[in-house]
Image (cartoon, rainbow, N blue to C red):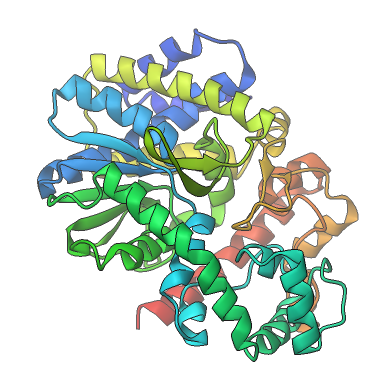
Length: 444
């Protein structure tokens, strides 16, 4: 591991370096060491930004959104206690899956369902997954397939064009959307009750804190509750955004206007692994003797163990950093964060690639199909070479490796690509051009 490199970067900020060294002494676990010198300082800088802005804006309550908000709340609680701040924190159990399934109750037309994200492209584009994530059981799916004339394999993953054609067939089945709406009634009532119980409807300015990246959870949440409260009180804070930041959507490191500077050497999937929680995805809510409680899926053992290690080290780091009164201006926090992240994410050594590559990951709201974040991708890693990508994209072929696509720089290391810099440069240049194009589209 490149600990000496991270120490050199942190050396410009003695208070943070000292905090990292003290936190690192508590465990010889490799994950704990990288957490002490990279993850903890990076998250500490982000949470510092959130708290400073909350104080300036007169925000009195901060909701950290599950699951990425778990470790962020732990850090914030240490910092707020040290500052003797009167800002309250809470942890809100939500997920794209739970929010969307409740949101469908407010949908009356196919266009409403489309706006709620029902037809959006996802990682697992099968007929089965599309309907299961909306609560449609097997017998209902059979009826839908018969009605729309679909006789293919419901488990087969479709490409974007095939998926769009399948969605066109679904849009002709009005009974389907009536079933989805009916299935969502109880989910809607439960989630609204949970939000009310959590204090989300209290008449005060509040913040929602998450990792990123489009603000879709905030958007769906505010749409869900707008009939119950003034959503203008709510401000979202994110580590980074792939959209334009605004008064309601704030970002720490980047938004779409400058993402091309940071994101080509950044991996948001790996960042989410930094923010692992010791519980599974929120899949719904139920009434209990203690009120409405969230229902979570079973957590992966690897993630649960990693979350405990990361959370423990991050809390220790925050405590030591607060003791040393390590105050860093926002611009310097961003610079430090960018340097640490690039050193780990863009050029991991073999140990780092193995540690983080082993994290199970799924980019689908249902988490139905889990793969390692990075791995030996074999010959398919050649798909990411710049000229190969251009050629394959024109032919409608996959521009990612067959496996290990969630952290390409980690897979480049684990596959033993030579020369590695050619592969890294191909990914970096591709991402930079993509983001510049996206910036022009959004910032006209």
